[in-house]
Structure formats: C-alpha cells, structure tokens
Length: 306
Image 1 (cartoon, rainbow, N blue to C red):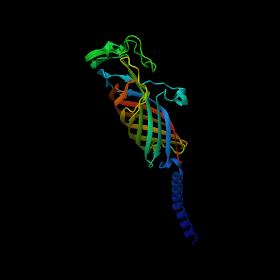
Image 2 (tube, helix red, strand yellow):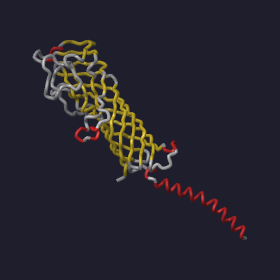
Image 3 (tube, rainbow, N blue to C red):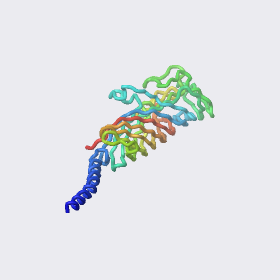
Image 4 (cartoon, helix red, strand yellow):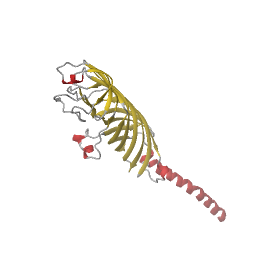
C-alpha cells in the first residue's frame, strides 16, 4: 500500500513539475513588455546621408524655357554635430523625425519628416536645350540664345554652392544657374511598416533588456522644399512650397534597450517627382524635375504606451 502510494506520488511529481515550469515560463513571457506591441507609440529623431540619381531639370519663365540634362547633385552632410539636438539649428543638418503607432503586434503606421539636402553640383558641365530671350536690360541676357544639347560650364561667373543671400543679386555677368534644396528637400510622408522580433536568432534570454527587430515598410507623401535657386541672375524665391510627391521603400534593423529606448538603422530608397518648384520672386518662374533617391538613416527613439 505504501509502495503504491509512493509510486503514484512520484509519477504525479514527474508530470506536474515540467507542466508547472512551462506554465511559469509562459507566464513570464506574457508579462514581458516587449512580447506585444499593439497599442504602443513610437517617436524618433536622427540623421541621414543621401544619394540622388541624375535628372533633367527644366526651368521656365516668361522669356526662357530650357532644360539642364543629366544634372548631377549631392547631399550636404553636417557630420556628428551638436546641431542635431540644438533646437535653434535643427534644420541645418540632414535629419529625420517620425511618430508611429502599432495597430497590431507586427504592423505600424507612422508620419515622418525626412529633411534631406539636394545640391546641384556647381563644378559640372552639362548639356542644355531650349532658349533664353531675356530683355537686354537684365544681366542674365548675357546667356540669350538657342541651346541644342549645348555644353554649359556651371562653375563660371562666380557660381558657388550655397548661392547668395535672399534679396541680393550678382553684379556684372551672373552665374548661369545655382540650384539647391538645402532647407531642404523635405519629404513629409506616411509609412506602413512590418516589425519582427529576431532576438531568438541570437539566443537573447530577456527581450525586456535587449531586443532585436527587423522592419520593412513602404511610404508616400508630399515634397515641401525650400529651394535656393538663382536662375540667370534673378532674385531667388527661397520659401517653402509644396512642389510634388514621393514614394519610398525601406528596410531596417532595430535594437531596443530596457523596453522603452531604441536605436534603429534604415536603408530607404524612392522616387521623387516635383513638377512645381518655385525658383524666383516671380510666380511665373518655375522648375520641374524627377529623380530617384537613396537614404542611409540612423535614429534614436522611444516606444511606450499612453
């Protein structure tokens, strides 16, 4: 009788202990903050480096219509600098801001502001097609004529990246063209993204301390640049203007620390079409272009529930 009781008790313990241990582990997993994302908000801030494809840029006005063909451009990085966190100088570096919300554990929606900088390379020779027929009294009339795949040196006559102060014009023969979106090439976008926890790939025991996630997404939005353009010596417009639209795809990796803080790296590529770019103080003067872009982004952020 006693032996039968001991055997029964032993069998019960053999069955109960693993089940109880599994239940405890499962309870711990469910209690972890990082086990579920639905209902969480995110906010992040960081910087970017950019590359742009060549593009044809068309400039139109009452007395001119010409296209700069296969124009090259580059970004204007600040490097590691205090301006990234200086409230008075946040638009000087190339920055990224984003706010998001998890609609499920794996999917989020967000609104973002990609502050890129696009600088037409001044030290280049590119072909120009079209015509210029400015009144003789305007300094830019120096360039009057018909252009048919005509090579133009854009470094001539005092041309400089950064241009000239708003409200000022060059004396004498002006630069043919100075053109940049440095305040900036602003892509105001909405993104839809997927997120997957890959911590188990690295045998991380507690994702509430360190968690690693992969993220992919697609986005679309408006281009709201502040364009610094000096066209044929005319005074620049230099104000914000909705100029077109963009679409994008991204992939990234996210490192979350102690539940609420994260570091994220992203690669983002996309297409920008701007048919209505303001260039001078005259509303009759416009530019248009379309091109592909590629961003490398690093951001710091927080994830939390309200």
